[in-house]
Image (tube, rainbow, N blue to C red; front, side, top):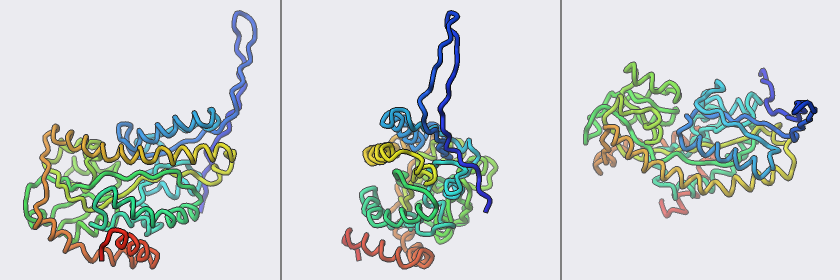
Length: 337
């Protein structure tokens, strides 16, 4: 495999300037400059979290570590490419969407098992058991996890209004990953796997007539320009995981590593709250844009769960015995059979 260049840079620049005829030498403090790649736009709360983290890293390291966040995929990497891009040092840091990495590491899709997780509190329980394995995967891919933040609850955004599952039969729905595609297909729709950056053009061209994603992404994509309804199905979850290349990480002093790690742990709970608040605000914005929020009727939701029940076994077959153990511990904590 061809490895890209390492982008962790050392800045120790002396600049000579003249003020009133006298030479003044300005010596910048030596530091590490890092690029952080994310596909989400500047207005997205995950990007805002990244920028706040970057700002605070500069403070706790006294400017010795400086992170520049590159939003909207401006560095040229699509979401599914981030795990390998950080591994190979093509970019030193990235905001990685876990469910988009299942081709490399199937276990990272555990949050996307349909209807396994019902709310953020349940997701915390699942992550309690899954995160040690996520850390092992990150290490295998030459990177360290700094923090993780979930997306809000998921919706099906569509052009049609219905109170029965049959009313969605045959609709081409954009999905972010294979597992979501399996779910959509099991429900009688047609899942079309498309990276986020290509989703709005697909809606504009009619290649898809719906999207399974959060309300936050719905606002990012201005879905009200293409779609009329969004259904609170709450079917899957996913998380952004901010990682750093281990070759780069090792070049940072132990003191600054400790400061950054402690900062990430401190900010993560606040970032989770931002996620919950973002769903409320974004749902309101979608309605203001002209969309209608549909609360899925109990009978329709029951049918959705029944038709997707077999996907948990399909997931554990792909992800292996460790996924069975994680889900069993998770369900036991929640008092489920």
